[in-house]
View 1 (cartoon, rainbow, N blue to C red):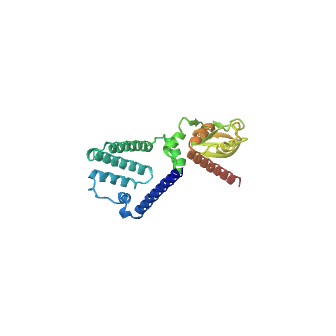
View 2: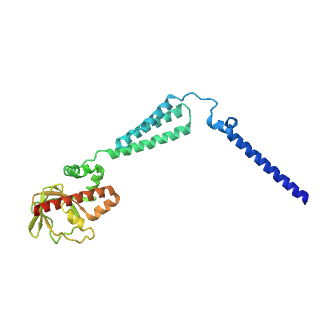
View 3: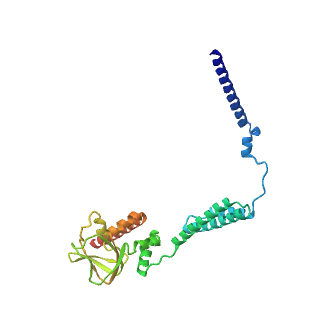
Length: 279
């Protein structure tokens, strides 16, 4: 038993000594890069190869130029077009010069992805046509607030809005009868606001017809107008139901902020004119 214990102890000491020697040897190699094949493999080259083909250089030149593109839509379009050219050159180099199918395949896929992005950007930049009335509305109120034409067209589409006409003397809303569940904006003409048959003020084109009522009745759809709104001339207006707007605002938060700003500005203008009239 004593001999077996001495043998185990000797074996343990030998293993410990071997591990220590190997560890010290590794430390010496790391401490002396000149004698370390590990460091030489990372930081030195036995022989430099000649520069790559012209196609390789042109491809990387395209990648360099693409990083200089600005962040606007036209800049993104330019960037993706240059990347398409770069990946095309890279694919050609991989196929014809180094004959590497994996390098060719990856770069060809990258080229196709950039082509898809380019088509999408061109689609977003396409001219959005509006009729004359809505074009005037966009230029007057929404373009100064940087609302994209595509987003504005969605706002005034038949899915959310309706364009209607009023003849002179026709009512947009009647006092204590009409519910305040919509928001109207006058495109052309003039309407008068009356309370108990007393004239209060007029509303002209490119102004909201019922912004105070719309804003004050958010809590209930059953509130009624406290004034009558009567067309003084032939009018054209666009209106949105409250539920349609709220549904759209959930998906388009920027548009919600813009319309809230326009409504607040319209209410402020109306209050200012009313105060001027009183004083």
